Structure formats: C-alpha cells, structure tokens
Amino acid sequence: MRSFPLLLVMLLSLLLLACKPAANSGPAAEVTPVAAENPPACVLRAGFDAWEPYHYLGQGQQPQGLDIEILQTLAAELNCELSLEQDTWAALLRKLQSGELDILPGASISSERERYAWFSRPYRQEQFVLYQRQDAQLNFPNLAAMLSAGHKIGLVSGYFYGTEVDELLGQMPESFVSAQLSELNMARLLDEEISALLEDSMVATAILRRKGLDRYISASSLRLPESEVYLMLSKGSVGEQQLQQINAVLDKLQQDGRLAKMIAKYQS
Image (cartoon, rainbow, N blue to C red; front, top):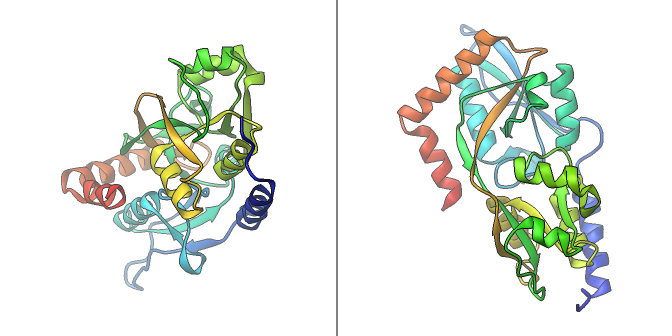
C-alpha cells in the first residue's frame, strides 16, 4: 500500500502538537450574565474536549459549538453561571467522577459510567463511521471481519462506541489503538500505523475540511447504528432534584423548537 509522504506527516504531527489541549485544566469562562437583583442560583461547572463542531475553542480561544450553545441556554434557563473547562475526554471523565466537574455534554450511557453519573433525557443523536485512507481497499461486511483479517482501528480514549465495539475490544484488544485526540488517529492512519479509525460523522467532516485532509481520508461504508446522546452529571456534586430541573429545561427546549433550531444550524 502506498505510504503517505513523510514530510507531510511530519508537518501534520507538528500541527497536532500545537493544538493539543493542555494536560492541566484548560481555559475557563463564565458566560451567563446575571443582574445584581437576580443573583445566580448556582454555578454549573461543565467540561468539554476538542470535538468540533460540538465543542471546541474558536476565535479568541472562546468555547464554541453546538453543545456549548446548549449548555449556555441550559444555564440561562436555570439562572446559573456557567464555568467551562477544556481537557481531554479521559481527564474530564475522571474530574466528573471525583465531583470536580458537574456536567459533560455529548455522552453515551454505559454501565461503568452509571456508577458515578446521572444521565439526562437524550437531546440529540450521533453516528460513528469508519474512516480509511482513500487509496485503501477495505471491503469488509463488518468490523469483526476487518479485525480478523489483521487490521487495526483507532479509537479515542474514554469514548463509548456501543456494545459491538465493546465486545470486540474484549475479544481482540490488540486490534485497537487509542489516542487522546481524533487528529492523532488521523496522523496514524496517514502513516499506515492503523488501517482505519472510528469517529462521529460530523466531527470527522469538520476536522478533515479544516486540515485539508479530505483529499486523503474518506468515510467507508461501515458505520455503527445511530445512538442517543445525553448530558452526563456527576453524582458527587449533582442531586436528583437538579437532574429533574435539567430534564425539565431540555423538555422545554424541545417543545418550543429552540433545540431543533440549534441542531439544524450545525447540520447545514
């Protein structure tokens, strides 16, 4: 199989190092203005990783994206100040578990996470797609067949890809390679260290266009079933009453059409 040019891979690696989130807590921003006569009822501490277009640092290093807008609207409806912190997803999960963070957007339910987190009502859907090099010839009916043929797949640490991938991880852990960022998996894919990677279709499209890699990486026909996405809340800092209040706001945003409008803006 043709190797990707070494110079371009080196340049891509340097760009990835430059944009990798810091290991310590990232920038925080309190974004809900509160009038003096209407003091905040709470401070909502939310975390996010680099996952454009759902949540990322945009112009002026300000948090942006679909899930950021939803969190800002949620905080305003609850009359709460919103504190936003960026880190890797794996680090954010540890902070949520310890109660250092109250809420994480864009989460899937797993039995492991239910030990330390509440889950809101679902507020959007996601679908993970298998991405490959455009010069690759990967014609497999499913992931199990692909892995049995000796191929390796890149994942992001701490992400939950569903029961199918979980079962394959248990059976063939050596066939998966984890990274802190999807961009690192893309670099490994171009350098032929892995055969493919799994990523949310909207996220992969945004990354490939921004970095000009859509000429070299494309979606395959293999995709996981669509799944519901939830807000995940720390049992160490959020009670069931607060969970009910958050669900009530999500219901309101669904019924008045604001949630659908926010989602549609990022799908266009």
